[in-house]
Length: 424
Ligand code: GAL
Image (cartoon, rainbow, N blue to C red; front, side, top):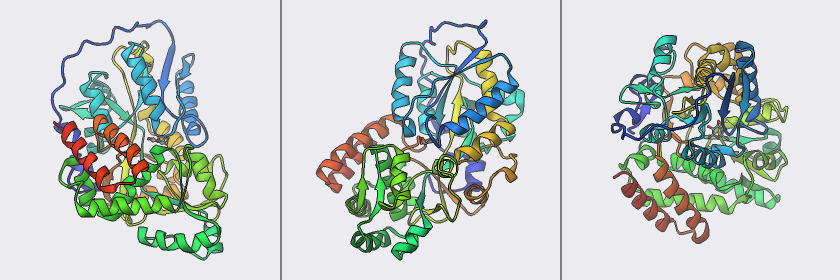
């Protein structure tokens, strides 16, 4: 994907629409239950900062669809790592839920190509949705002009969270470059504080994608995912070395993102790099106030850049309660639903005509940044936008080795080979 600004994303989109034609697989043989008034929705939104938004959307769905039982099939685990393997097993066994969460981008393209999803262009046409979402976003949920999912939000990955009072106490201001973070780390160490808090492997990769973005800039970052940037190049290896140095000044745990962020709140570390679902958690479960209780800045080196991802919902082939799945998708696509969901979730609406006044504090600035024509939009690796599942899984494997042997050049070479192997 070449470097694109937001205007271009809206106008042309990228990637997915250019993908190959669907292979012909046989549709799922799961049992249709048209008489049951029920809908089963599968996501990974459970736990603080994840569940509140889903609950609000669900409550509105129930209000709009009286008598329809809502089955929440959420599988816990940030970024959907666990959920996706449970889902894969269900789909394999022809037990699809009525709708499941999916990231826009190459993650969606994989499911479309695997013939897992119904073409829902008819819903877009019947409800006039095509003009209600950025066309570039719709293209990231489409192949061959057919649309396969409904986007509920836009999240930003490249953010660094901190507690302003603590930074003041330690005599530092929010770092603007990764070199500055490393300098601050020395001063912080003298006070018994780590520079960063990181957790489970996916949170480490989340940090890694944003270190690469900050160190390489948007054009080279985009090139990592479309073969234009050589992973083995000196600049990439140097960025990986910087990442390695950052891990060395971090408190590295195995927890999901919430307890990892808690270490920043508790003063064990200065920063946590995480997507803006963190705002949902900090404002909601933690009841902290923006700018005093917590604050946030673009992750170092990425001011003016929106490393985006979008959650969407699908109509899987063989969904047992298709009519109610369609009702769920209508809820997800509605202005009302999006404006109930996103302020709690810590995301901005995917809809272009949402009510801006509902987005306050951090989210008011996020919406402004997202809509700013000069903001440069790039896509997240960890959250499904820029790498297909096979490439992403090879990166995860290579990363597992990298954390053991700390060999940046070897990691770069492994990822470079994985790109070649998986893009054939
Ligand atoms: C992302 C997802 C977000 C948020 C995050 C943490 O992949 O798109 O909505 O839930 O994981 O779990």
